[in-house]
Image 1 (spheres, rainbow, N blue to C red):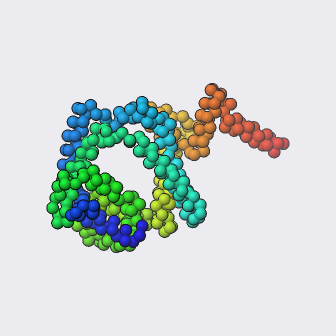
Image 2: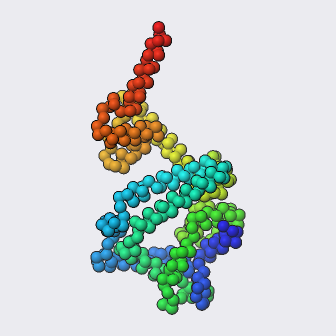
Image 3: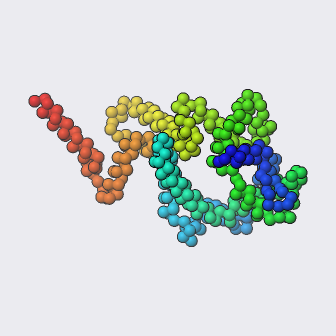
Length: 347
């Protein structure tokens, strides 16, 4: 993003308004005050109740409608579940290959493709959300907020009956500041100077935390994120920090490392029981699918691969004796070979 664009986004955030130049006079869409936001939820609740009484679907019911009309399938469900970890793995690859521009470019191309696929699936599952109770209520709330926040350059409230509400709302939604833009502004020299002064007592936006606009709050969050990265003992290379994909990959690596250490401590705590300390395998009963997932995550990656291969073998063969499992047979063969070697050495 060019420096001029960075400054434009920054000062839009500072002023808390978006210029709408498509009308005469030029209008400004201001970020809502806490009072307007609070009152807007009353509009939401009122519209939601009316929609529900009129027999409008709620969101969780729409998935059944999508299934019945072949607009969503179980395959889409499986693909949606798989795509997030795939994106995370690609970001980790990006971080690990930040010094290899050619390979990094290929990883980024795959990453953009996966993100587009993920967005397509999200749009597919949400394609009827606008006709739900929630969608109808949120639209009414958005229109009401616009009616309170669209003003002229003199600061006077503008009568939206004089223009197309849809065009104003569409322009506002299309002009939302993206995560990439927030991050580039947060890294920019001009904002870092402002942010540094604010930590020494100067007021950044002239408001307390509760009165910050959504965009101001988001920018502060990203600035704090970069502070934590720079202060981390394992701070990554500057090229990684400046690359959103690589930095996301670094975050994922740190998270997995932390989770791995936590998992190791949990396992060591369980194995402190003398009855199971020397066991090759420990079975733990789960009382829910979530508990089963948590228990499975306590396994090492090697153990998870063994479980995966066992499940595949059982699914293929129907039923398998313990001693006929591939990994068990391999262990038995290895132990027999080692015993034979020791016997020969003993002679």
